[in-house]
Length: 442
Image 1 (cartoon, rainbow, N blue to C red):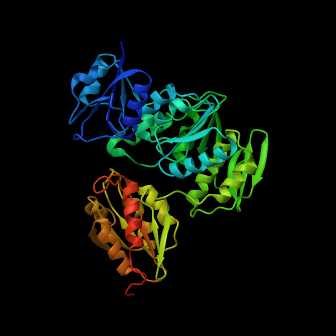
Image 2: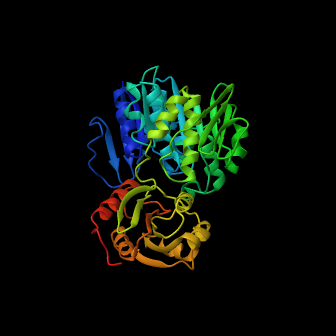
Image 3: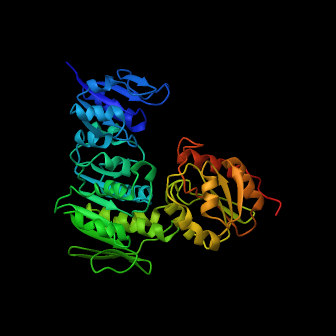
């Protein structure tokens, strides 16, 4: 008789988990609260239900919960009372993978760039490696293709870590912690607790790479038993730091200096590069390889991505800025003359921390999405245009832009009020910009 397994949430990770379970010999039932839709990627052996969660999923011996689904929903309360184990796709995938090392990267901002760069360094150093998690594809998609020699580099969100309290990577990376996803976690304390899961179960032989310049990261660093490797934009006696264009690696007995060419803008990206350097070095990559890969690295799509120059105005796609702090980082990357396209689905944090930067560097804000009224209230005094949607915002900014201006899409909000995800929002922005005429009326 087949073992029964339930999957809660038929999104990207839920589909991957369900397909993996079928390959492992489970009888799989998947439940989704959304409307019924065709899912080509889902194995035909998986039975499904849409529009809500019935008690049928409680016939499972194990339930895999997709990231973002609250643990307090009624069907999961019933599962807890019945003693049914509920785990994340990440936990299920790790259980069914073989690997030499796992490098796990989290933080409020910079995860994707750091993971992408780390993955490229590891790939240059080790033939058998994959990059997975919140970037690219779920680990479940490749779990059965891994081997004892595979190095897995993964980007993890607070949602994933919240549901994986027993997770233990060989190298963890904690980039930064600022308010985000409070609409889900409810409190900052719960958000921080979720992030801590990246290193709580590590052992003395493991490595925890931690941002020394972030007060919260530095404060909670004492909770891990792993070897702590701090990184900083200022000199450190031990750790990885940046000074005058050089990166110094002081880890254990190693005292190394590399001089990579940095091609991605902003001091926040220096932090990301330091974290990737530390993680890669702790995983065994040689300094020469780290230096070479950093020097050839051009960044990631949707992260302060140069799109086009029109009549002396430069257009940048920063759609991945889905929270206030990431937009702060984007604004700090430019000296001024910014025409900012901002707004989307509010995530519960105030926009007031942007007030000083907006006053100093932003000429006008073009508002899109459902958060417009809150942004106008929090950033009172700024020059606003209610564009409503991204099509109007690009057109409005185009007509306002003059030589020397920066037209920046950096929403500080989630995308789900008008788009499927931030990738779709960024791609539409780039398409609109590339369709603009070569000259404007200014």
